[in-house]
Length: 158
View 1 (cartoon, rainbow, N blue to C red):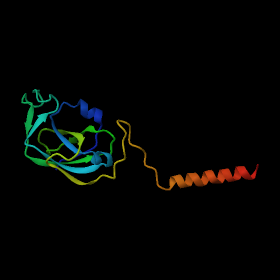
View 2 (view 1 turned 30 degrees about the vertical axis):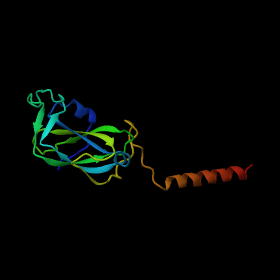
View 3 (view 1 turned 90 degrees about the horizontal axis):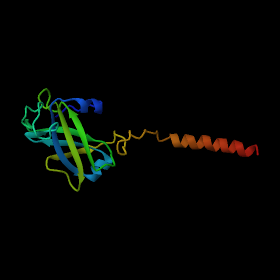
View 4 (view 1 turned 135 degrees about the horizontal axis):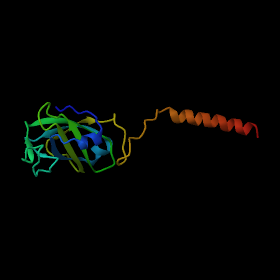
């Protein structure tokens, strides 16, 4: 399985290191709720940098040959129907050093995509906005209690 780590997206975009690409379809509900997946990676991956046209990173072949394997992918909860995730070092020390997983919403999962479980650790996202902050379940009750106390004091002095 690949070693996925969170890194600065802008820094990853600037890197010109070998980058393969795979495209999958998942049920829309998996994108809305977030999910942990295993994605079967085919033996031949298109080069993401040149879109298969040939570049220095892929040695002008437009693709990478890899051993068929599975890569763990964690989907954040999103409202978008299309997104791309980057998995760093998916094949240990071999190339490509990054795998871009393009994900589109659909009715059912692509062949080779296995649902592992829900992803409740990732906060919902709206488009490219930062994740919504976590609020402890008790915080609204404290706010209401303080507000009620202040309102009670204000009505006693009137």
